[in-house]
Length: 324
Image (tube, rainbow, N blue to C red; front, side, top):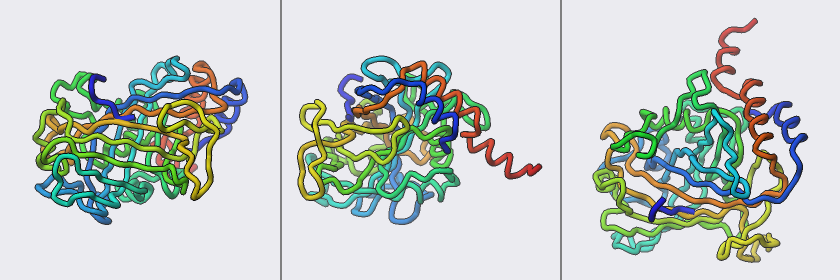
C-alpha cells in the first residue's frame, strides 16, 4: 500500500455456521480502499464538492471495499464474495479554522443510520447509536442489483473512476448482504478519531478533488469500541503496540486499550467524475482481536447461508411487492 496507511438480518444459517466453527482467539486485519464524501448539517443526500473548508458539524462519510481481510494471516474473504462497508464521523473540533498544514481535526459519532435511510438504504438490522464503521459480506456480484464495488485504481480503473455512480448508489452497494461487524463510540475514554492536514487545501473538497489520487492530503488515526461482530466476543488491543491487552479500564479510566484500531491516509480525488459527489480517496489498515472466529471454510458456509436465506434487501423488496 506504499505510504497510504490508515489503520441483514442474521438468520438460522448464521447460527448454524458458527456452531460448526471452533472458538479461538485470532487477529483480524483489514486493508481497504475508500471513496470520501462531505455532508453538511442534516442534509444527508447532497454531498459537497464546492470551494468551502470543513466546519464543525460536517460529516466525513466513506464507502469502502476491503480487498485484504485476514484471520491470523489467512485470507478470510470466501471465493465469489466481497467485504464492503461504510464509515462516517462528524467533526467536533478544529484546532485552527484557517487550516494550515498540521491542523488537527477531531471527530465523534455520526448518524449513520439516518444517512443510510435518507439515501434509500433501509437495513433490516440498524447499525446502532455511536456507529462509525460497518462492514458487510456480499456477493461479487450477488444478484438482486449487487455489483462489484470497485473503487481503487488497482481494480482496473486507471483514472480512479469508481464503479458506483452516486452517493446513494455507493451506499447501497457498500451495505448489501450480511452485516459482519460494526464499531464506533460507546463511551470508552480510549475512543478517538483524529485527522491531521498534511497539504495546503486538504480541508477543502474542491481543492482535494483536483489533486492527483496518489498524493496524500491528510492522515488519520482511530480507536473504537465494538458494537456488533458476527463471530461473537471481541477482545482488546493495545493502541500503541498492537498487542492484546486486558481492557477495558472502564468509563473515566483510560487504559490504552480499544477493540478496533485503525490508521490511514486521505488522498486526492483526481479521476472521480465532477458530478459524482465524492471528493477524495482514502484507505485504512485496521486490527481487531476476536475470541471466537470461524475457520475460512466456515466463513464460506456463513456467506453462502446468509445470501441464501434472504440477506439481500433486493430479495426482501421483491417479496414485499409480490405478496403470495
